[in-house]
Length: 347
Ligand code: DNO
Image (cartoon, rainbow, N blue to C red):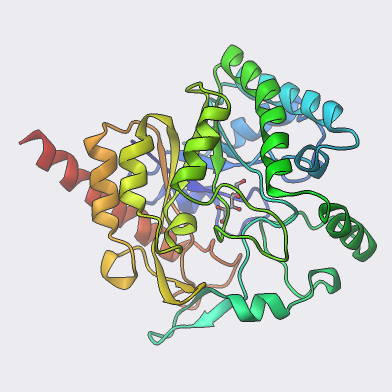
């Protein structure tokens, strides 16, 4: 496996220089953040990003994400033009040497939480999700927002978008995803970029919007929509693991040959559709992280791995879930588990 770390670009308080000092860290996961969703990424911008990362002594490993325009997800408007642009971006990324792209197909909202700084008993704070609280929030009034979301919507724009989604069923979303894959994966195959869809977080419908990348049966259905190694997964343990019927280690064992990117983090399920984010350590949460790592090792996984959301510890402030310290601890822990599991398997 190749250990990587997410960096949010020049505005990220977690600098490349700091990331470089995490033991063994060489791979950066990032994106170009100022190009409007749907527009093609120019090659020069990608090369500039790559140079910045390489000048800091690391490599540009994964793009997370090339976002998918809502017209594509809704199957309307300018979707063909946006798909064309998406393909141009993939060609340009490939020309710059990028071989893995993460994206998601969640309508409107990417990952969602009810509290971005929930106080934990040890004095740290973390992201948490409480379904009842989320359902009381009004996304049109801007009552919740997260770093992963497209922040370019006005109030009216958001209302119009949510209204437009009222006529998009789950089956429509599947069809629109297939339409997208049929066009994009052909190009991904041609330029050898592995596409890795991120599961929905949380893996259930919110605000009445359909969500489909949520469980084993749906992942199987997704992989069959376009049966190619280039149509693959970002397997996010924390996103899928909050639903008690998703057994993450089993998902790894089942879909290993289509997983290109592993997000590994722990969560603590605290009730029905309620969870807190936890330290990566198995005993800190509900997931057996060692079993998940063992599953990757048994399958000879050689894709990218990154620690995922961290708590805010040691007085750090910054992007919720994306501080330096707890994610660095996560990387060190995961490196230890991989080393142990790999050595164990070689015996
Ligand atoms: C959250 C992230 C997601 C992810 C996107 C991929 O921390 O895992 O925002 O980047 O869903 O498109």
